[in-house]
Length: 596
Image (cartoon, rainbow, N blue to C red; front, side, top):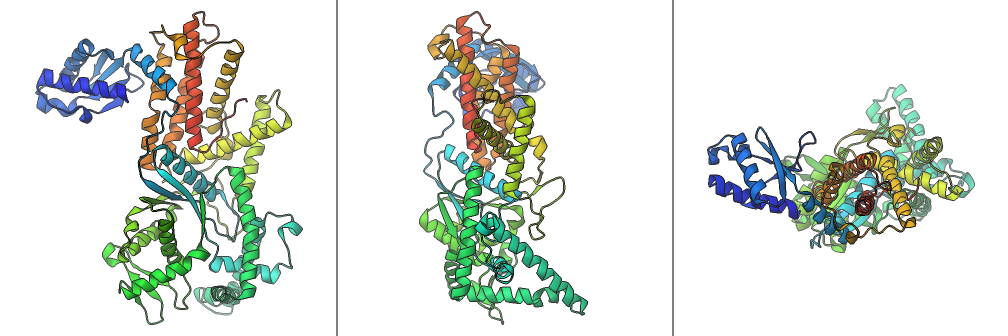
């Protein structure tokens, strides 16, 4: 920010002039002043006591007096121990605000020349999406949008886990119990129908395990010897061998699931530039395993299984290919990583995957390095914590999963109930009301899941998330709707809101300055969110901006203001807040309504 740079340069000059201390302006750190003290920026003097030969308060007092006299940007100052709090002239804030009004790309960084691939969602084709997938989808989409705003070329991809033993479990259960049921005949979405058979498999499998255990077999042995598990393994082998009947069943059931996934993705507002399918990447993974054997960086055990020894990397031995030649997760991940790099030579490949897979991604990176793959360095695992509901952790195999579609519908119903109780839909057609409920529901859900640091495990409370007060999506959305109403009224009154309409304004109310401070911080916030891969930084910004605006709105009149220039400025300020709320919420994939 130009203002901060100018102040840093002045402090650098003052340190030299007063204490003969040479510090480059780029090394001068300014912090936002804490709310309980007067000022906009704070300079910490403690680090300079030794060089200056003075106490921190003495340094602060001398710097403050110098800056007030020699620097046009500084109006006043106060010193609290070793903290120099600087008050900036209103004219500087107004100049910044006028510049901001003219810059429609404010917050968008210039092209960085970096390619970043963001992989998220990554569902299995044996069950529908659940609450954990929602956090994954919202996080991946938001991170991709934030990285774009940081000037990177971004490709959003979805790796579909469409093969493996878990897929065969659904297929086997359907083969045995399906009786030709289809999404059309059952009235179920395709992904829900297939998920039903995954649950049925697990139920029947557990019964077999218990029966074998009751006959005296060791429980772990029973899990391996249960007839259903042996049949599922045989089906997987047949699939990899291209058995026509098995492959046709796989294609049919997967097509049902994809139709269901597409419906969910459209409903929750996420998209992808490209899809990858593990059924198309595992063979390339097997080639990489063969390459590793030839390079003697992998080894075979007596049973024929292929392993890699990562003890030198502080990891363990890792299975890369089963003894029967079938692949495991890491096999296909080796193939996918290469395929992704060939399609989009990335500087960084971000994998949005839950923290349960932390070890897996350490192994993937280390294994690719063993193979000498240069793109291994670019692999970054964006690890996130699981989502719990008040009832505890979700488990899909027991059929107690918190289904994504059902949760979204529950949120829409809650939004309808809350909105009707507050009387916020007067004059809406039924279609407009339905669109508003959907916008509020998704805003509440996305915001609640994104406002928490990705690494933290979190508890999702649907009722709390949709409250119109506090740090919630609907609170920020309502602020935008309130401003939209102000702008409509201004338009009806013929009030202009260009920079020329308030040209003689030179004084600001404290709340107006606070709002401008929030506005001009946006590029720094976008940069921080990109560096940390943390949409929570953007969510917190949107909330603080909305909060600052609401304080301004409560304390200052807009339409009852008799000074036309002051009124025009406040409408222009409102318009800029609406723009930055739209931008910040847009980075999170959240729509903001014009009316509520």
